[in-house]
Amino acid sequence: MIQLYQPLNFMGMVYREIKQAIIDIEKMFEVLSRNPEVKDIKGAVPLIVSSGNVRFDDVRFSYDPERPILKGLSFEVPAGKTVAIVGPSGAGKSTISRLLFRLYDVSGGRILIDGQDIRDVTQGSLRASIGMVPQDTVLFNDTIRYNIRYGRWDASDAEVEEAAQLAQIDSFIKMSPKGYETQVGERGLKLSGGEKQRVAIARTVLKAPPILVLDEATSALDSHTEHEIQESLERVSRGRTSLVIAHRLSTIVGADEIIVLDQGRIAERGTHARLLASGGLYASMWNRQREAEEAREKLAQIDDDN
Ligand code: ATP
Image (tube, rainbow, N blue to C red; front, side):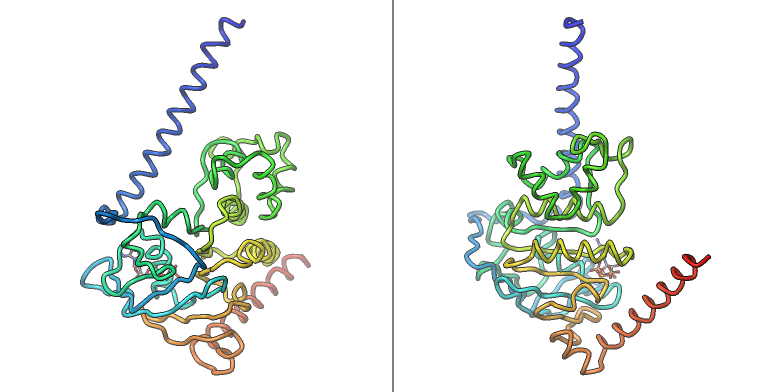
């Protein structure tokens, strides 16, 4: 039995290594296919985050030279504060998060973190300082523990579980018979959009970056899940510089500043209360979302009654 076990065990190890290599290759291709032109300059230095101030200074960008997407964008996310970007679909909101993570280089202007142009620093140090909670979180065909630990490989089991608690996914994990050893993915446990987002939040908790970028999922979550995610995000973003790309206005009511983007330009900016009072684009977006939510709730009520 032992004789049979050892080669099988060895094959298991080889399998895991090959799988890891494939994941790394996939990641490499993903980055390469996005934009091979983003490279470290000669003499790039590590980013030094002192307070975590983020500044976009007259940023211009186009994926295709014929079609400008961002047309001179200036704003600041002061250290420890939360700024939300909202606006109609296609306005360029997610593009802003991709530029900050330097998946693309700006076509004009600059992005500064604590005064350092992000093109002058190493990509590794830049990405290590930013926690990204993307729209769609990639989960690996491995255990839930592995998937959370992806945020920081040297995290202990206790730290992984603490992060899961903060992200409010711990009780969901414990409901599975194998707990943290449950396999996720195609042949394992399938996670909903909201659960995947909580895994991403748990990863970010482990990474504990000074700067946080949340690209909210477009898909509507039910209001209970939304509320829970909101709560976990608030805990994670406390004291961190946070840039929130928001699709649901209800999630960013408390932001220090809301920037309304329209066709690549800042149309309005201010706090929720001020923007509502001014009766512009934000106010009309807010009213439209409220009406849609009320209609959804009424439909759900009718379903419940039947
Ligand atoms: P949504 O609210 O629908 O997510 P958004 O405001 O986040 O929209 P972006 O994803 O930033 O919009 O996209 C802005 C514009 O850039 C869109 O017109 C989109 O089609 C275009 N775009 C996005 N990614 C690429 C790409 N990789 N190549 C070419 N064009 C792109």
